[in-house]
Length: 562
Image 1 (cartoon, helix red, strand yellow):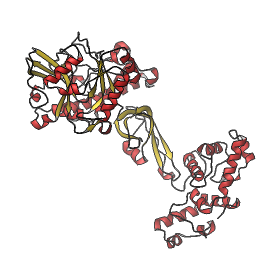
Image 2 (image 1 turned 30 degrees about the vertical axis):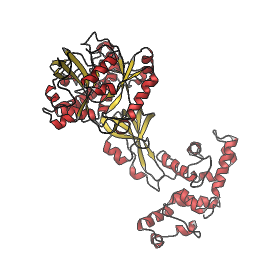
Image 3 (image 1 turned 90 degrees about the horizontal axis):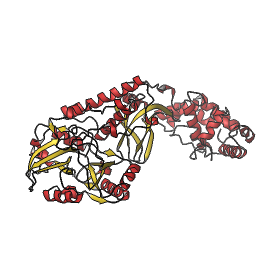
Image 4 (image 1 turned 90 degrees about the vertical axis):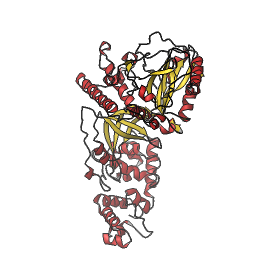
């Protein structure tokens, strides 16, 4: 209901778009702003052309709505208020040649705080589900259906009267003596056991629009479409009267899914109830409206002041890439991390998302400024679902050289090895390895910054006096750190092998020590029942110069097994 997506497109006036705060506007110069706006306008035009001409939806309804809101926001940011024009490119293809008897304009979307204020200033309120479908106007004259019109641009639409003949949910005849009845509602895709919180929108709106874009509908197609009447502009004055009469005329869902409310708490209850309940249609929020309306201007394209929308949490959020950074782990695995313009999903603020691997990053071909869809996976972990459109300012991201990072790289501190070296130290002190209590990334980073640790075993030589000389180490911290280091020296040989990063396949025997293992060839390892690959990795580990240097330090500090 009241959707942006064509042909159920709302005529959006920027007069009702709250001006973004300066902090919310991108830091673009005039040329870049124009390029970004033009790119998004063209992308929306392409989506609409595919939607209307070909009957294909190339973008999820929820993302489409956010893209249009983004365009309007940019227009407000980078134009004088007197120059702002509604984003009506898409409306050119939606407008029909049939004037609507009453305009169908979009509702203002309020957040929780705004809605609380709105409700406090009004009485005799009702709440309804915000059905996610295709808006339509039905006109009955002396009980006979004479027009079924698309929303079009909000003022003029196209005739769908031929389709009405096979949509069983739309009565062809009403039992009434009224000379004329005008109903506004939503044609929706009938759903079976649909729970919005679990299933989302399922692109139900696009599916209905695709059916209505056909030149002819079959009876079976028509049977999949329902109707929810949400307004009767020339009907009874009071809401309860309208609902009673609609039910008598055969539009029972209007009465079933309309509830009187007196407070914000009641509005919140019904919003949550319908979000998690089985409904016959997809929804994207609730509509709160006054019982008494003021329809003196049936040709107005402005949102009504007596009704507002409170949308559900987004299933997918649209945001942009501000940067791509790279996490390099102990084993040399490189994980690209997309840094995002902060966006809210459910109750989480998402600022970054893992891209998995360099291969995935290359496949996505992401650059700074690209706009992407973010969703939450099963355990509320953010995932990048797709690139929605690309920035015209293509900024190439410099990738790390993959060959430089592997299981035996970065045993020392350097600009290129900062992350992997720190990951090695963190692994070393982990409670499952040397169990250095109180020693974590911040401690290791402080020691690296103070140039006290540049190799994997430099910390072995640090004393309480050495630590107390450092800026961020007070007496208590220095004592605790030195105690953790001394305790680590007493850990058994097999834990030290694991802490140093020996291949996971290795399980040291009680009789093993460093010298005996370092003397083994690849063939010797295979004779110990390791595979050829495992033997190769074990031999490489024990022969690596940085590992041998660490073993010598451990021997000098009299660590067991070395």
